[in-house]
Amino acid sequence: MRETSGTGIVGVWERGAFQPAGPDTRLTETTVLLLAGTKQQLEAYDREYGDRSEPESSVLVLGGGRVGRMIAKALRQRSIEYRVVERDASRPGRDEHWVLGNAAELAVLRQAGIDEATTIIITTHDDDTNVYLSLYCRKLRPSAKILCRATDQRNVASIHRAGADFVLSYSSMGATRLFNALDVGHMMIVADGLNLFRVDLPRSLDGKKLVESSIRARTGATVVAIEDSGGRKTVNPPADAALVHGTRLILIGDPTAEERFVESFGAT
Image (cartoon, rainbow, N blue to C red; front, side, top):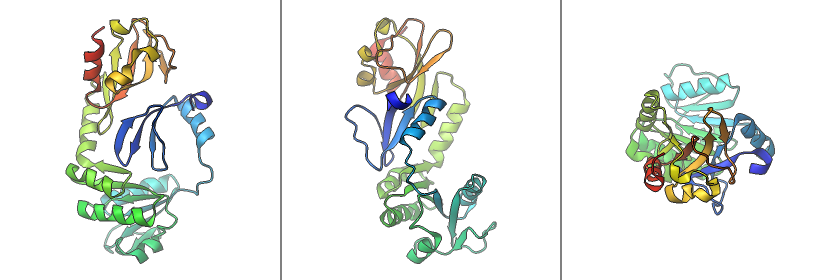
């Protein structure tokens, strides 16, 4: 992958659980990759590895409330085929893309096109309902990507276990946006439990090659870029990249990775 596109696999998600990627990491049909690369490298990845046999995207949105309507608007703006299932006939904005009925009924889901849907988005504000719908839709459509809303952070794990690929929690999304808006500078939250951070190269690593540093083994973090003293970045640097005094490392890892990095390698 690195030779053909320049990208590298930083880590993988399996049903919401993130782990760094190593040479022995097994990729399955449910694996979601976290890639490091420039825009051009990611475009090269799509050209090389994109599955052109997949049908056109067809999205099924379960719930036509405020969140469901905003999703429908975004899909419409991108010319992506979609259907919204909503049981409340009084909801505003209904059109030919809407199917009136209960999403827990098989006939309603089939009328809405669940058998062809490549993505299912569950938007109800009741987490118990979301757990049930995630489980039900996973059994009906094993190959679909399922995205689900969680009102309570405590229910995120349960919804993942029910079959959702991604669960978006109001509390974690809000905390992430607020933290990143603070513009801390050296750190950015990429997702819940996953941070991108910058560190000046410690003296203990000066003169070593990246492959000799054991950064991933000792900290669990992955170097996604090296920034030189002039601000130029080498994204997804090769294993034999030299670590030179005055450069900065850009790493991605869990919230404690930066602390482990400092404990392992010291200061600049």
